[in-house]
Amino acid sequence: MRKRIGAILLTLALIGGVFLAGCGGSKQAKPEDKGQPQGQAQQNTGAAAKKLKVALVLPGPINDNGWNSVAYEGLKKAQAELGIEGAYRENVTQSDMEEAFRAYANQGYDVIIGHGFQFNDVAKKVGKDFPKVKFIVTSSNIAQGPNVASLEVSNKEAGFIGGILAGLLTKSNKVAFIGGVNMPPITDAEAGFKAGAKMVNPKVEALGTLIGSWDDVAKAKETALAFIQQGADVVLGDANQAGLGVIEAAKSKNVYAVGFAGDQSNVAPDNVPASSKYDYSVAIKYIVKEILDGKFEARGYVVATKEGATGIIWNEKLKSKLNPEAVQKAEQVQKDLIEKKIDVNKL
Image (cartoon, rainbow, N blue to C red):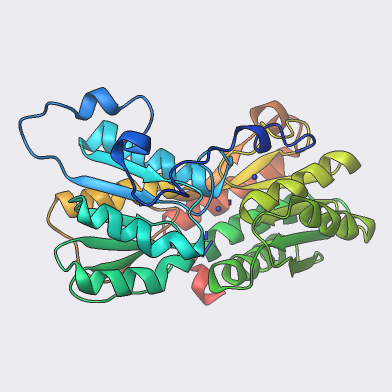
């Protein structure tokens, strides 16, 4: 992929000037370059017992406030709470994916995680050459015995929650979804968004389109502005870094944007009343624990609201200003998802 949760503003100061180059252009994924999440290196040195070595390969920067940053947070959580040794490589292009996987495998890493659907082919190819290494691709459904698995935060459930929020917050009864590239994680999220909006607001018109990019912030903003011009007063962007353009558009026209992937209320505190969590930090910690517990299988793993990977993140600054009935309804839907009273795959 990407699925995905973008997931990266006015001045792009949050992202543009501080994107790290990482090891993306190097020939070796050297631990001394980005060998461990920042602030954890000392914790991982000198240990007597062998720690599980986990490498995370990212298509974008760790500070994108969305898709890549939540995965990086998951690696840090696994390191801090599960005692693994972690490494990461960011801004890895399609042409460098295989080299990154092979570099980590040759360095003795036990687990290599490719963050996104677009790592599918590389994981299957390199996995054949390193049968003792576990390869995991996020936002995917691949599996290849004995050592290739996939890990997905339910795109449809995350989109559904975003749609619930949009359907309850709209006053014009018109909302819009702006996605990135045309692939299953994004189209599933769009389908969930439209189903969620319609479930809580039968009068709503749920618009949607894909911009064909993960990083074209200007195009995402332009597309969102076009929907706002058509009357949409709540928009959601599921397009990695590009999704920040959707929030920029909402801010410029003083309408609402529902954040996606992580808590994006800090991007526009007066225009993002809530975010639909798409938390790969939870998912990555989950799969690492499965491996540590000896439960790993070459299959597809899916986590969602019940596991804490999807859900609502309220902007407390705006929550008190929202319609209390809308807030209550959104929280009830979230509770129903946790208790499996709603199955988004049947909607």
